Amino acid sequence: MISIKSYIALFIAVVTCLSFVVSPAIAQEGQIVRNKVYAPSLEGNLIGDSPNNRNVTIYLPPSYDIELDKLYPVVYLLHGFSANNDAWVASANENILESMKQWLKDGKVKEMILVMPNSSNRFIGSQYSNSITTGNWGDYIAKDIVNYIDSNYRTIPQRESRAVFGHSMGGHGAVRIGLTYSDIFSCMGASSGDYDMEDYINSNKVTWAISSALEDWNQYRASGWSVWEAMSWNAAFAPNPDRPPFYCDSPFVYTKTEPKEIVKNQEAYDRFMKLDIVKNLNSYLDKLLTMRAIYIDCGTSDGLIKHARKMHDGLSNLGIKHTYNEFKGDHACCVMNSTGNALELFSNAMDFEVITSVEPVKKLTTSWGYMKDR
Image 1 (cartoon, rainbow, N blue to C red):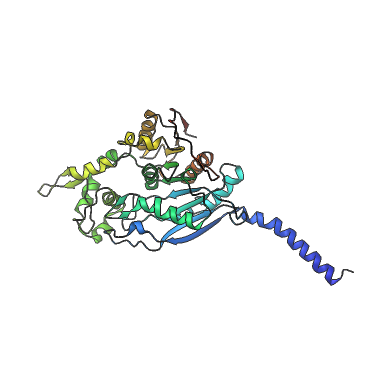
Image 2: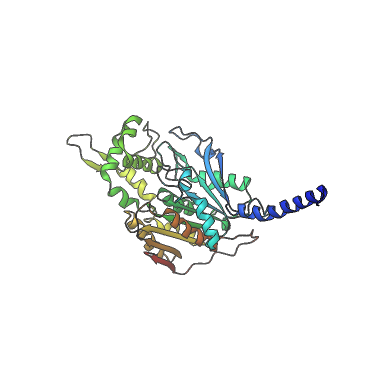
């Protein structure tokens, strides 16, 4: 017969063994954390969006609560227009937690922290640009959010261990932020982004003219998705503090006399062109040369495939190493697959340890990965 003392000792031994078996299994799941962040970069915006309690979703890798001395690189994931930070965990098929679990199991990616900020505003899309009208959304991502994450999580706080990636509006934002804040990010990537504003606005003159004629927020809410998006671009690229209630101009407007015609608003148009990524790509050459990895992709059934190809051609002509991918699909079909491809590239490019010195930047030779219809 086993004594009570022996039984207790056996029970403790079994529980101890189980703890070593169960904990790693649970840890393999990773975890999603939700925080609220104050955004000083958004203070004083003209449309009245609050800088308080901005939502941010954070993915922590499986070992985060086990290896308590371990530091991690960070990738910032930027959502598209009319979406928010929940877009990355919204469904079973498009869920970053489940996807990371599989990618880690397959050895496709390494353990990292993923940060998914909410970048929606009163126009349901910030375009990730600095603007007196909407606030400094580029600064919000690159400064406010990065500082918050580095201050509250075990990150490797160096540009060589940071990357930014996004889809659609977030793709545009990731490239713009990567280029503008190349001292903060060493890798950037985009799926289905819009980089060619000249093509974009000239292909939608009516929409932009409609946006210029709106007089109040009730008209705005009744105007529909395409006009909402045009207005978000106006507010980001052509802010005008003298034009309430939207405080922005449009590159195309209706004439005031009958019959009404659509004409170019040259001043606003020129401001859009100054922020056109592909048109001004050569002005970013020095910053492009510092990038450790660049990822661009788009579906062949996506209207923005023209933008992706122009971006690919522009980078190639400048001799910038990058990975370019075209796949069979439309604008929204394959976001998580594209994200996985980008994270795989970043896993091989970022530093996973703190570095004490950085080698001088060397000019990259003309080469790229091209994965078509994979």
